[in-house]
Amino acid sequence: FSMKSLVSSPEIPLIQSRSDGFQNELYMSDGSVRSIEGISKTQNYKFRVEQNIPNPFDATTQIPIYLPENGEVELTIQDLTGKIVWSRLQQMDKGKQDIKIDRRDLQSQSAIFIYTVRTKWGVQSRKMVLMQ
Image (cartoon, rainbow, N blue to C red):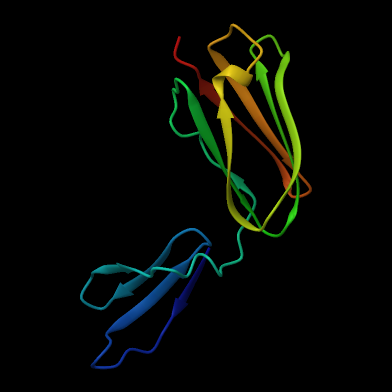
């Protein structure tokens, strides 16, 4: 992330701003922190995969993915034996994208899965739990 020192004025007592592509904040001279709304849509995202929501899940869940630019994304879901129970390869747009998973599409009796997202920017994996 980046921190920028800015010149403050009597009307706007700003000390620093912070932006990491996901969170944008202003640090004011009075010690308060203010959020900057709407900037993240124009920020340069870094590749990141977040925890599925909800987790654990019953019927459906979503996996949030952040991409720095348009590109190919491969998502695989494995049970704990390593068997691939769901897989998808697709083009996705820059920014935050969600991939929806329906429990009926998971070809396994397992309750714990590992999902892996592969892109040209890297590979990230997380664990998700299916309520039985």
